[in-house]
Length: 137
Image (cartoon, rainbow, N blue to C red; front, side):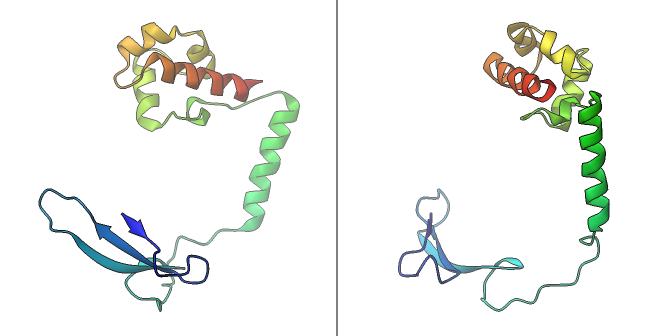
């Protein structure tokens, strides 16, 4: 359980974590802080200068402009990864079942696909199909 009791949730970054019920641990509490560097045990944390976090703003704008141009021209590069709720491992599983594109997903029978795809109910597949329809509309 996480608490802000005794702390001003708006002005303080101090929080309290409480172990309420754990099979192998006694009840216990600890304080932590939410800082610019992440979660820490003290309020004063130095942010490390890490490489890999830098990017060029121009590149981001160019990619956005290219996506807008594709959208206007009617060409779409909508793939299965763009569908809300579908990740890389699900794409691999779908590809193994012969579903490699959004149109393939839209044509699939949810009940049949859910029986072949581990961990996906027919309701979940219907959600994927609705999300895919919104992307292609």
